[in-house]
Length: 315
Ligand SMILES: NC(=O)c1ccc[n+]([C@@H]2O[C@H](COP(=O)([O-])OP(=O)(O)OC[C@H]3O[C@@H](n4cnc5c(N)ncnc54)[C@H](OP(=O)(O)O)[C@@H]3O)[C@@H](O)[C@H]2O)c1
Image (cartoon, protein in one colour):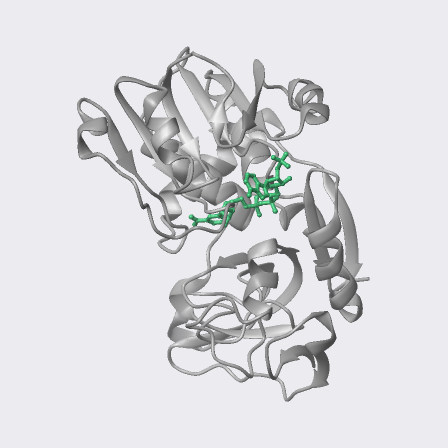
């Protein structure tokens, strides 16, 4: 089987397509045949050596959709079962999605009630689960006002659709004036600029998702209504540490975060029910075969269109 191995960090030329033996299931692990997966900027950062906990050689890629290919009798899995996986060490502590087959712990196989083709299915696991899980931390109900800071990201676009489906009023941000109309076309009730990390509005919101990160979180808190929550779950600006923070900013407000590592099957079921009911999807900008993984990663870094980039093993 083919695997994209990174032997040392670097640019896309370090992605080496190698022939490897088929993985074999054991008492605690089964084999997934990978049909498709999303490609993300944060994985390109890992490839370049930006994730200190990832040791090379490694096959990266934190999510995949596919089927159970080989398992053992007590695993609780069935050969041919349609599954997906995200995180939990996948593509970081052990080999991830950039290969044809992967060996996974049995408890990292998740089930989705989704009947679309593999490429469409591949847009959902990491991007939508992150969006839905983050949204849930805000505990909003229909009619309330949500702000998505980083509205043009794939996670932001997914969240916008999910939030509209549960009846929220959604404001989404971008740094680029030419993208405001695109956000409205995509279903946002309001689109606003985020200029030099300042929201260009006086409005307060019942809940805020902040994906820009530590550099904007104080400004986000200033735009929260009393009793409301801000979930800072992305670091687009690349700053890990919150340098200036006054705890008194939090009086009668809440700050939290979300990580897609812990996958709750009930939350997955609720999310796919919403997706199926409202036919929710985001644009798929381009689909690449595994043999063009370097081009796929380069494209993700230069792509100016909003949406997901997918690799399909069936091309
Ligand atoms: N917590 C979790 O479990 C989890 C899981 C997955 C992803 N994430 C995070 O979620 C975020 C979105 O991921 P994604 O893959 O959906 O992103 P993406 O689609 O690659 O996002 C691209 C967009 O990010 C915006 N952007 C880039 N640099 C920025 C900066 N310095 N300041 C503000 N905006 C910037 C740009 O929007 P404009 O130019 O239009 O402003 C750009 O179009 C990332 O921070 C990612 O790390 C978190």
